Image 1 (cartoon, rainbow, N blue to C red):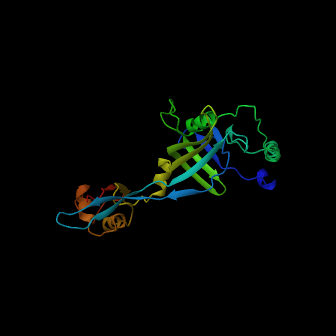
Image 2: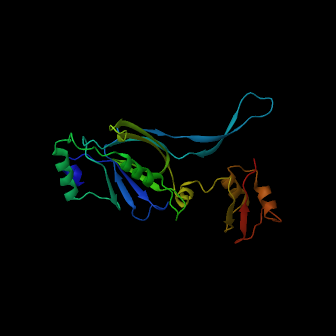
Image 3: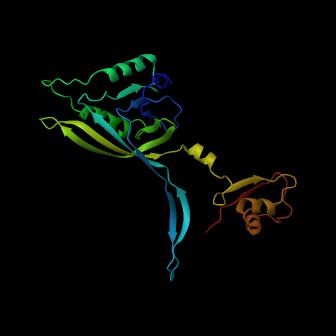
Length: 257
């Protein structure tokens, strides 16, 4: 908000979380040195392919919807041409002091000492890599991330990282790098179950019979088919599908395909 009021460009940031619940405040927040010029998104549906013997066509059966994949390119430069990026503890919310400091850095002329040795970007790139994909010995996982830029937000994990060094000192040490990252969206299991259709016929369901409940109608509601009530009665060892005692638990097994 403060940056917006003062006319400062909103920097993309990456929040680093220790667990998949995203409940605790992030351990670190990375503010990129320069906002990416572009990003690309990929959405994938995974199918199980089956083909009957003697046929030429393929029967595609839905398996799952893959998590969203997004590609970003991050720029690192230690020549002094652009202000450095920042890594802060916690959520790293901008303060008035930070905003004033950013204005001062933006107005400061880019003067490079011709006799001084330019710093390399190796340390910054390595720290960036360790935060995004470093292995945590306590959780036995790599980090859980949240990408935030303008109105875009994605809870994700890093899938791959390619580093290209493009400018070097006389001794061969890099002073500029482009880091290409592929992030894959992730959803907490509890949230995923809550979003999915609980009446899926591929899952086992349990119902408690209430007054006026009919096994035929419950079976049709779950399986979207009116021909499975006999199988449900047999599976629950019922003497009759017409007279099921109130309060009895009935299991509706998954359909075998």
